[in-house]
Length: 119
Image (cartoon, rainbow, N blue to C red; front, top):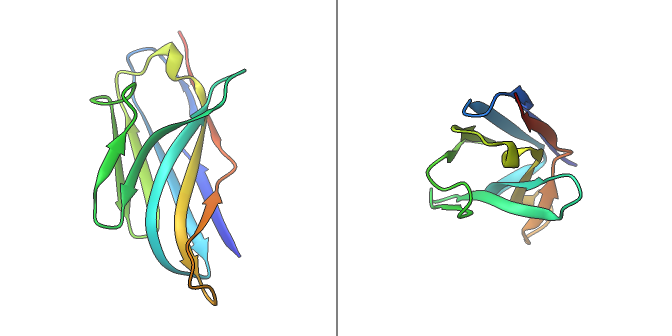
């Protein structure tokens, strides 16, 4: 019904940059917010950043000043700079949206894209 597809992961050196994208498709009527979470090996999934329909952005303290979230229609981006080895994780896209036939907002997740920060 709804798909979130991430792209842009890969291997990057410490101090480098990477840009992730996530495109939402399907029977979407409106999007309330889109965001990013990440899960490092052996750890729980953590919040990274979110952007509301009104353009308000919220960031985890660990990425403030280094990551920038933005959105263009049904696609959300995460621009990452000054990457550190501890940023290594699978990055998941998340969307709070409404679909055809449902008045309630629903949460959807992408399958994730791996970002590895290593020399």
